[in-house]
Length: 284
Image (cartoon, rainbow, N blue to C red; front, side):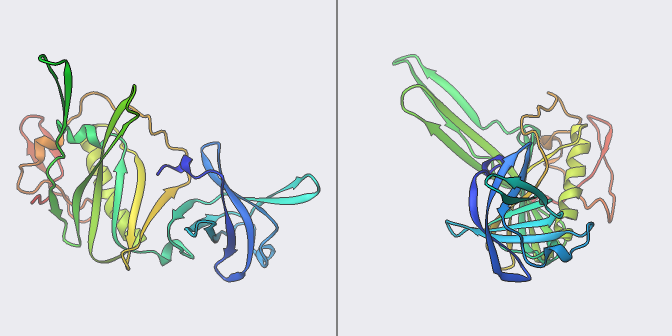
């Protein structure tokens, strides 16, 4: 799911402190961001200071739970025929679970899809061959083998999925996506989880020679309920990375300790081919 998929979603919305006061509203995607538009005002909202932020929870007509965290006070618009519309812009959008604040989130695992991660991993997963006997084309897809890194408080695993679309007449498309799964040995807070994510992001940025961007986030809470998380910013998923990197995953995958936690201990290992210091971690 992408942020742009959240458009035209209608539901009932309420403040976590007053669930009985729910009002109708619609989630809209415009100018690269998600906004909630409601008809009517939440009770008690006028008591908030101008610089205070609020959380709004809701459920769609299909029953899916939504949490809009760190919303600023709403913009008011006058609509025909004289109705007042209120527009809220959250900092974080959570699909599939209800949280009153970012501090309430506890996680068993979190999976991050980075833009360009597949190029860095450089797995040769597709092969296409033509059969000269009958003019058939054969496509083969080989899912990469899994690997795991023990980081002490959590494991890092590479997660893969594959989707294929065919209309049987003129088009066939196959998409391979790689993600990084952080699996915590004990339930983690959101801050602790994002610290782990940022450590890995910094490591890969060093390898690429350019900053890598987060494309999407999915997670499982302490009860293993899955939900999706979006930072409400305009991310360009069509960013193209340069066609060479300082260090590829294949350069380090056979090292005894190929990754580390950057903010605790920094271990440098020189890779002879590149002469560039790199961070290292335990792969199994």
